[in-house]
Length: 405
Length: 169
View 1 (cartoon, rainbow over the protein chains, first blue to last red):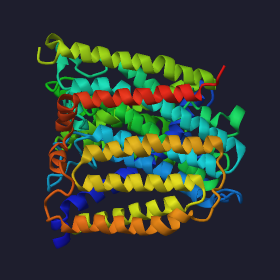
View 2: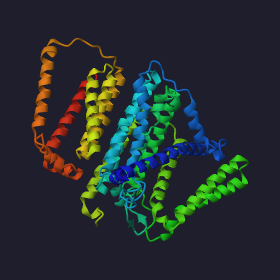
View 3: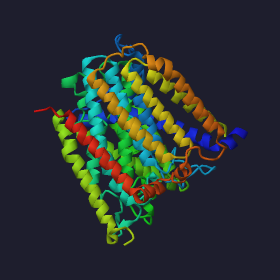
View 4: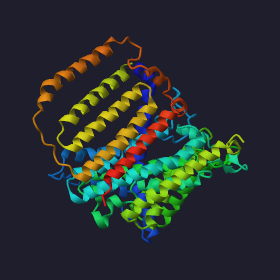
């Protein structure tokens, strides 16, 4: 007891890290399922269907497959760097999530520590960029240490691409910083409270619409996703930087990519879409019942689906999902719980919209050519985000346009 | 107090190890990685001193930008394993004693400074300006001329690099 009361901050942080890690790992697994399903439906296919109802156990099967595959290390590779690269990629991708506030800071533990954020520091945004700027090492070192032609080319391409787009990414965000006047994530979110004309939320994406599109484009390039996935263009480079990786080391690169996707989606939500703020005015009390109602609707859909279309074991699996979402939905409806799940509910919903957008883009757009990618980044995206920054600064100089007016 | 002390000694040990490995490693990429280790350990040490902003900038600029460029160039040139030569005569007979002398001098200086007072002149002001707002006010008001002069210097360096890299017609 003495240790816990003396180091309550440490204990609270460890609990938060453990819970967040569990949630994020599950989310990563089901993000692969989500992506395969959405892309499949875009291409008029069913996607994963046979492992579990609607393929819901596919991530588990994939995880087991990765674990039990032969872990082969190329004999000519640089062993130390070869092993280090996937760890670096995944560790940095997961560390960045420690800075994300998933809910309002006034929900706290008994010792005053906020529940929904692992580390609420004053310069959250800069720290996030510090961590993500290191992320390029995982890819570059993987390409180099494999000691093979295609991975090296993939690693080189990705380093060049990530350096180029990081500039636009950072500059496109500065406009929001000028409006917010703080680097703290919770500060940025709270600054977006209130409404224009009584119903339009004061989120930054309306005044910063140009910055938002620059951010969105640069973020896709930064996470090496289609249409900017040149580092692993399979028609040219086999699989790019992770060609020589097998088994769980390959899975770690995969997880790192999805974790980065979640991070940039969270950042877009925080900076441009009001983070955990609700889009509706506080006086609309019926919104408290939305999380519960949504989950119960999902549960009822699962029940109907299980009863009408599923057979055998799949019916049981979907039944479990239905029970879980009905139970959680009921819990969220309790008057003591409803106010506390508001923040995480809106945050998750917004992040899900961005993740859907990501997958949608992947299912729709063809890949860029490498020279197109570079000239797009340096000759279009960078000037536009710079112009956005300069115009925002000029507008802020005239007091008539600032918030206080 | 015990936790910061552990973190300090761990990071100090990592920084020194990284610095030694940087010199001893024969593979250029290993040297670059050791240098990254030094940068990151230093950033954590800055964090312990309460300079959050400097710490983050240390990582962004050195570990995230400068070293990425180093690694990129090493990969692009596919630099081979470094070849060892014997110490030069000067390094063997004058370099090592002089290095030791410098180390002892620095240690004596740090040891002699009374606890709580800054070793480096002007460091107190730096600690007070640790918050981002105060730092930017100092940088963009008081030291604006120096700041602009530095950026022009960097611009000249970029132009110089461009001229040198351009193929002669």
